[in-house]
Image (cartoon, rainbow, N blue to C red; front, side, top):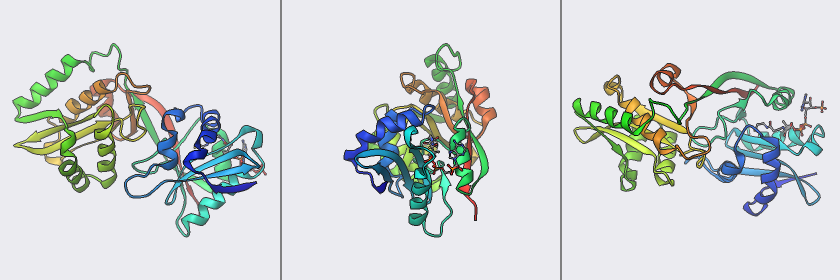
Length: 291
Ligand SMILES: CC(C)(COP(=O)(O)OP(=O)(O)OC[C@H]1O[C@@H](n2cnc3c(N)ncnc32)[C@H](O)[C@@H]1OP(=O)(O)O)[C@@H](O)C(=O)NCCC(=O)NCCS
């Protein structure tokens, strides 16, 4: 068995392997982004494990994160997964490895609780669970809280308080990116820029006196699936209904996507339950290497 960097040309061998190994993830839509994409700061690296000319294992990493790992069912329990983790350990140096929750470019924000083989495997590699995270999901069809009429009502309500709520324009990428990076987080700016450049341009903003005070986006990370996030309202403008207006605007944009309505890696569950009826969709466990 040979471990070597996976090139984009090899990715055609990786797709069927990943599709079989990760049944709870829509990997065929986002495989390239996960294997080779960056998060704006760290480039992605993909390794393959080869048995002769056959690809039997795949690992995607970025810095100290393992973004995904999969071994072909026919080749499991032969030490291939462990060899891939060893390779990741070598390139991470002294940093403790983490699994999945790579900010700004993640397949999922932890190991899906249903991937029990992966959990046992990680425990045997001396990783431990350090947290739980959740995706919520809002129903986009026949949901009276997510309609064009509701959006118009929320935008009007914001206008009565002096706010302008509208879609972001592509030409605004530089000032917007700078504002989000400075006010919230650099990786949020990265995800917003992906969403803005994406096919749905699903970035919505609120302004007060021509100054941006809130944003929300969808279909940035895991582009093509339609996941919602990130979103943020400047502290002094919270409680004015802006988060709701921007959320509903984004959810309307992703009605035709395979996983539109997924609200990734939440945060304020009660807010999402109240404004769009979102309920728990998937539970994830965050693993970190123990030292
Ligand atoms: C997790 C996965 C990559 C492990 O690959 P692997 O090549 O079979 O792992 P290894 O052979 O190196 O296993 C090392 C040790 O982990 C433990 N282990 C691995 N799979 C296990 C399982 N199904 N049940 C119990 N223990 C397991 C064992 O202790 C094993 O050593 P042993 O075989 O000598 O008992 C593989 O099961 C897989 O592809 N799963 C689906 C993909 C997935 O869920 N990925 C995580 C989300 S990205």
